[in-house]
Image 1 (tube, each protein chain N blue to C red):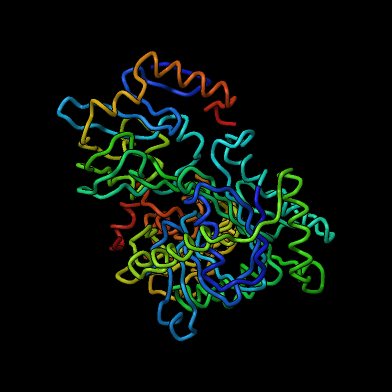
Image 2: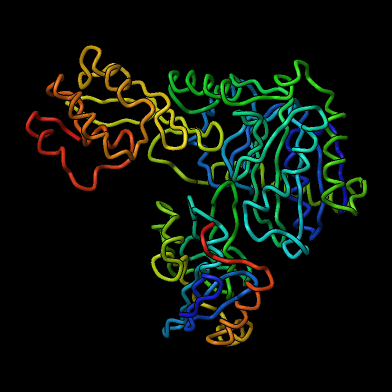
Length: 147
Length: 361
């Protein structure tokens, strides 16, 4: 796990750095998706998150969930086109799970990508992902440290 | 940055333009007022949980669910709306949410200052004058744009705001009183209702400080067409009735840090209903409906002891214990914990005592 400006960025995940989402390839053709640590930090205390229903088909970039914090509602964009095969319904009861554990219990949905290999190429992984995030956070002068 | 100064518009149009702009990939500042009143739900709210639909139908009060955050609001022509749509890659946008809100509330703060009203940013997203809120706001992301929406209250009818709430008469009465005490308006501050056009002029000057390239525009055919296409979707009964967040108890946010809740718990084979006004987690007001679990004046006495205390104060259990000694069989610690903190105690310290006197819950 790399730490950049007090933000945790695991090296074993794929990232869409611009959209602040992570993806973990599960080995069974599915992909787990969530918000990154910088994304949850930026959101602040998350009151509520509403993942898309199982069975929904999403185009890449469309919302896997909407998340509300401090009067702000934002989407968690899908890093792959595909079908939602699992949704983290615990988030309907307690959105703060994402704040506490964005890469674990705070996962959002599991997707079955239509073309995993092709769309995976648009994401960054491992050290490359960490470096891309380092560049972005430094450009934005953003720190996950609580003020 | 295009400025759409729309003046008074059909009620739904006062929401539709800012929803349409990001879908066209366009930035803009929209200033408008609805010609007639309506209720506006936050994105994640649950209509059936929040609103008394029969009340709205009787009054002919329409409803809208916006795609930005915040809670249910009553909107009418005595409010000047400002709505800002910016691309999320616009250079210089603050990454920190609180700073983002501060930046986009600044034109409204400056506009109020033009009228001699000294307002300040109350994080995350309010403008306050003294200890009262004068501007309600919300924000969100639509497509690749950030949307910030707010209003300046020229005047505000608190009775109209609480009327449609799906809540008890006691809750509505208390909510109206709390709003009257904790909200202010330009009329209240100035002693007269300012001309909306003059308020718009002041907002335009403020947004001119924020966007050097602010230039007047009129909605073109593409914007009007997109707005109308969205009307169908955003006024669709299915979208309005979309299930949303159902909090464990009835609650309304009066202003930042100030919440009124109605909480219920089973005790002594009956129900205890508490109305609780919390300011920054501190009990500002507490009252109980008559209940067999609160004999005589015990409820008043307990409320008096708890007023001014933080709900998470560890001393509360001792306060309860002293009170309870005078009223054996009355409300247990477990139930009081649930009423005040909205959850059962982690360690059931008082549970044995409760069971000994046969309390439920």
